[in-house]
Length: 351
Image (cartoon, rainbow, N blue to C red; front, top):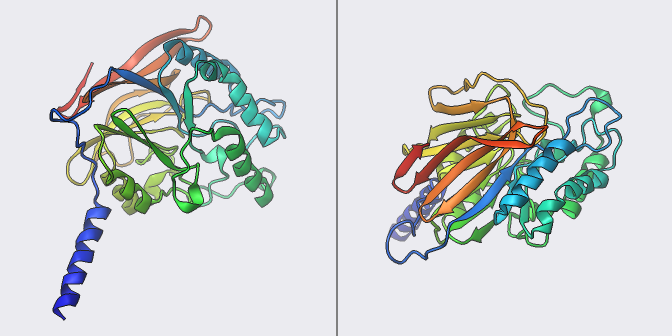
């Protein structure tokens, strides 16, 4: 009996540690941390066209994505993260084949690829299929067939998953969910549709953040963890969402909603984590008040529904500066940083 009690106690302790694995940087302090020169990466999301016209054959907002690609190529960051909805996908695609949509996306992104900048993408709802839980059923004429959705997934994998993307995700999510190390940061990209809509594989996530810690942890996926004015996001399953929020570092990049929003949300231990909605890569911009449904918990720090743009992150030792580069004049390709803040292991400050 005594041995059984000891085994049960050990198992309970391990379960508790895994389910509440909050990320704390191990090499953020101390002389043992390896020093790197400041480096950068970009984050874009929702580059689809969203046109209601059947005549739209591109399924990508060519004008906006081309300007974003040129600006990123000029800056030449180390890599680009893409938080889903690259193309119209299954919705309002003018019967353009899926492979043609993704090839058009890659064609527009050529300035980035020519500079040797690696691109890491995850799927959005346009890249995976209709929402089945939180929204009303689709009209029959918009409903894609099962074979159509399997082709969509196949073409996303074939056209968008590059050789450098790790094949280290959960069994059914190879190439769709993954993690990689870059200098003093761990980056985790999450598919939120394979393991059930509005969910991630939390067991896999816990294993990744419990590995050898880096100074920074950056997590990106398509859907917000805390809902805005739409119900189709990770907050559909609040308990699972909170487990996810307890497991990440300081920043979560997402898209889905077509505006820019930065909000501070604490986990169960009181650690401040920023949710940055960055759905400004080309999808039709949406108006929103900035008032979250869970307003008692979410502190909105900056909101902008008026401009397209993308995020540029500069990592300098323990500090990371996150800027939203807004396209303030499309005709003249004029960019301006409209939101910027810096965080470190010792706190965060807005500029």
